[in-house]
Image 1 (cartoon, rainbow, N blue to C red):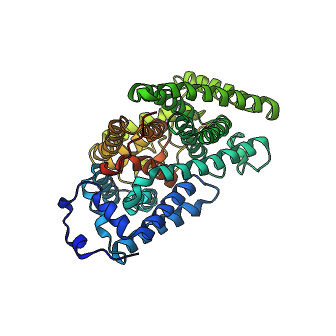
Image 2 (image 1 turned 135 degrees about the vertical axis):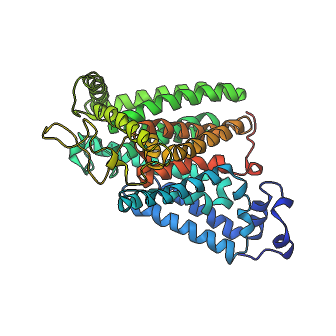
Image 3 (image 1 turned 30 degrees about the vertical axis):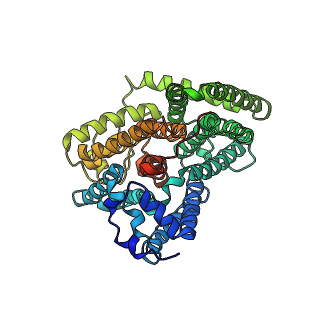
Length: 451
């Protein structure tokens, strides 16, 4: 890494337009910038690899260490001058600060500290700030890793690989939680599916069509219903938004639709020929099961099925929030307010799913956030998502690639209604990865050529 010039060191942040400080840092330290980019891409690649859980942690540490070295030894600390100008950065810092302070009033701070650890990936955009402009390369790395996960799920469904936990009702998950695997495969499909419309080149289209076919098969076999809902909303909505905001790409939206139909037909054929209609039967079984549980939840007092449990958990979460609406119960303290809620506490009924005193999974990140850090914490989370979505939409007119992070954020938002994505490192990591395109300084937003 090379030292910056005296003139560069004396330049005030206000003397530069947004993004110039990053360009100067890249010119002053080209090797450091390239290696920084490689680390970001490797972190994105390892993020979905639940079968190697330590890999993303190692890459997170490498990003932080390299960022510190560039800012100190490399003397390009001015590359981070744009951080205070980012509203998302301020909201993330406030979110982590509030979550940390909530341990002071939590009735179970030990478990709360464990939950706080899931927020470690908030550090990624800050550590990689000078190279966030290379988010497309990171997206390519993520799609490669996600496609590998999808292929493993298919291999587990076929029986070539041990599905690790047989109690999951034959729902393969590639050595991670079922919903995590489902969200990764959903994001992978959306990336492949939408890049068919905005990324030129026949070779890329073949890769993305093939990747989409693999991912959709994995989504069906994984059978996470929240991901099915998110997929439908984000995929259809993404095409409509692309059609409306990028009129020069409208002809390619028909290519997207054709590719989607082709991938679905290929997946159905493979399912019928090699899996004995396992995927089709899974869709029917999970759909019918959800309808039955919705009907039963109105007159059965105990928790027989995940739909019934979610409805009772959401109702109980609402009561917990009403008890402490401003600051919440603190991280780790949610179960304290839930133990006596009807249908959730322990009983002698063997068919009842009871919560653990040390942990409560409300199956909704929004209920979790409001119950643990209050309405203030919920406002911070919603603020992060709202600002990110707004910035991505505003940039779509210049850069149609932005349809991809918009769809990925949409999928995360929808899945988080039904799953506690904020309780796991991979759930928070996916959110932060999806936020990166919205955090790129405006001077580094690439304008795509019209086709």
